[in-house]
Picture 1: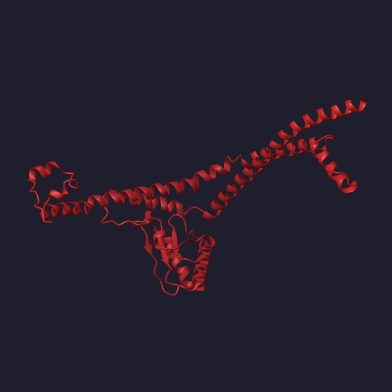
Picture 2: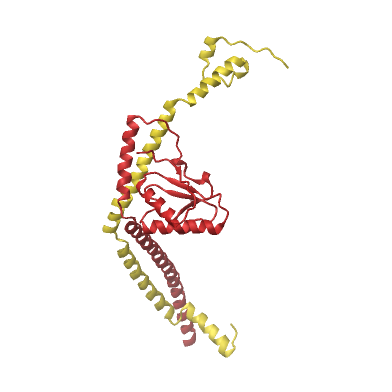
Length: 130
Length: 180
């Protein structure tokens, strides 16, 4: 179907900038062409590219700075003020104390484990019921 | 001084001598590179190239990750001896893929600063630092394991103490019954 296209005056078109997609059906082919060319030139703009490379250089500087501080400052500080070994020793002490307590409880005559072990012993050697 | 974007290293007959000469060049360069081995379909050939490079890196004390990475593109041997290996070119970090025009004064100043920092990083003794890092991480892992184990014992002890109280009362009851 060939529908007649509305001719939008230039001053109205200027006012409606940014809403080209909404009233794109009312644009003539020539106007559409101008708009796409404008959009293309905006993308190819050298300012945009310069911004990108500056952005990259800044990110690269940040990355290198982080690597440098990790390898030169943070690692040596970590080695100087490292408390991990002390914490490991403390935890090992705590572990051995807990172990002793557990063994003492399990060795208690009427302990749950003792009773269960007695039942198994009786069943195996004296054929008593579980 | 060049912008540290990706550049492909193209070379024919990547033998041991070539690997050493490339590594010597890489030590002076302050840029990231990649070597495309996707055209090679012989697994053994790729393996020998990777081994040549690994040998050259260890001989010349070159780290393929700092300050700028060197990547090998091949679908074989992922994670081969600390080398950076990716399957296809799209898997390379996009950070180093940049298009640019002539640099202006501000950008050149920034680039000079980057050059100084990368020089500093190159002077660091990687072997020692990475060993230190490994020691620290293994210590942290050991601490985690021990703390986890101690917590487990603590839980067992809590539950055993509850049982102990119950068992003592039951024994006392039995004794009373026997006496009666």
